[in-house]
Every structure is written in structure tokens, then in C-alpha cells.
Length: 81
Image (tube, rainbow, N blue to C red):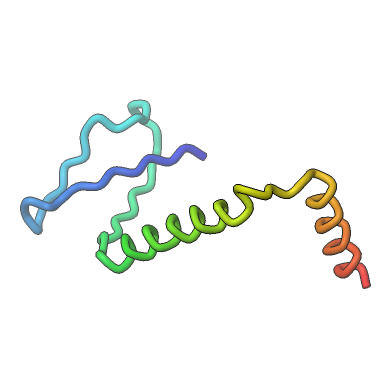
């Protein structure tokens, strides 16, 4: 499924114009309008920072392929029990 996201600021409260959409003429589309809020943006920023911190944990001593495989195998074994 193709998706397209566009952020904009409403100039008036009664109309919205979407132009330059990447869809073909006659193609059926669905439009969902969701207000952007500051809290959502803050959560995205916090999550991105958490990912960077997590990735940095093993940057000086990265896990080997064998260690990763052993962890996966152990997790799968626990699921089966």
C-alpha cells in the first residue's frame, strides 16, 4: 500500500487544499486528518534519542554474530518450553 504524508498549517478553519499529490487521476484514496501536537513530537524525539543511546551501548565492544545467534536460540528455546 502506498502512503503519503504531508504536514501543513491551516490558514482558515473551513478549507484545506491538497495539491501535487503523488497519485494518478481517478485513483481512489482515503484521507485521514490528524492534528499534530507538541506531545507527539516530543515522544518521537525521546524515542529517537533512546535508539541512539541503545545503539551506542555496544559501540566499543560490539556483539559478535555468534553471541547474537546464541541469544536468539536461547529466547526461542524459552518460548518452546
